Picture 1 (cartoon, rainbow, N blue to C red):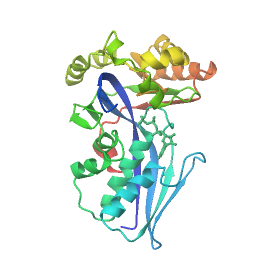
Picture 2 (picture 1 turned 90 degrees about the vertical axis):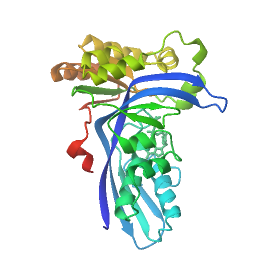
Picture 3 (picture 1 turned 90 degrees about the horizontal axis):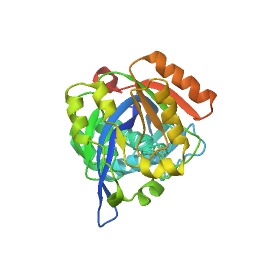
Picture 4 (picture 1 turned 180 degrees about the vertical axis):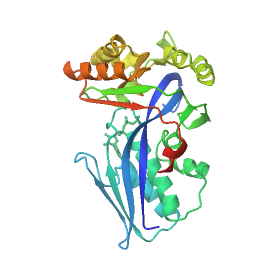
Length: 294
Ligand code: ATP
């Protein structure tokens, strides 16, 4: 196989709780992860000349070893002594630095793609073991679907697929650093925690309204006071009939779940008109199956 095309899917968090801060500074989390049908497109191409070359449509993204796709390729090239070169063409659609694991998913796609292209024979679990060395979200991005993530996010339990619904994704034109959010989170002072176990139960029962009602993200306690536009976007989605709306990951992207497409479209139009969000996309839950192919 000389080349391969891949989809790197984005994720949202239906629930995000931080249980404690560990001695080593890492936060222990309990998150409900959900893949959505928004993706970056990658093409991997073998080259005669050795080395890794990255090309991307976003001028501000690094194309050297700072890009996660480069890191992922290098990891496998070094371990398997791959002498041939690799060209990676990365077309980004997932908003960058948005709490949607875009970079992690790109890296996951490279690991999966290289495994096939170079016939490395690694199982999904073995790919996940390699992925975690580059980022805690990468094993989940390899797994995809609905899952409970614990530990620092790498300890995964697969859950039943969530019922189909419309997912409205809106990213305001602000930059929120993940480091800022976690370093300002006061875990011991949190007054409430999302009911992650209750949400798992609702997922088992395929109860979309129950899943939506139990959405909660403790990181909003840091981001919303600092960036009130996040609350404004949530309110706008709710006023247009979202089952619920919440920030994904460490933000600033907000997503809303809708049972009717028409309401989601109206919310999208209002967000654009009021200029609350720079990027607005209507998508859906990824449920595996055929779409899993690429
Ligand atoms: P997470 O949800 O895992 O916190 P995120 O959505 O906050 O991820 P990313 O979009 O993955 O963040 O990237 C954050 C930073 O990583 C960017 O500022 C960017 O410079 C760097 N980066 C490296 N490789 C990539 C990539 N392939 N795609 C996007 N960003 C990348």
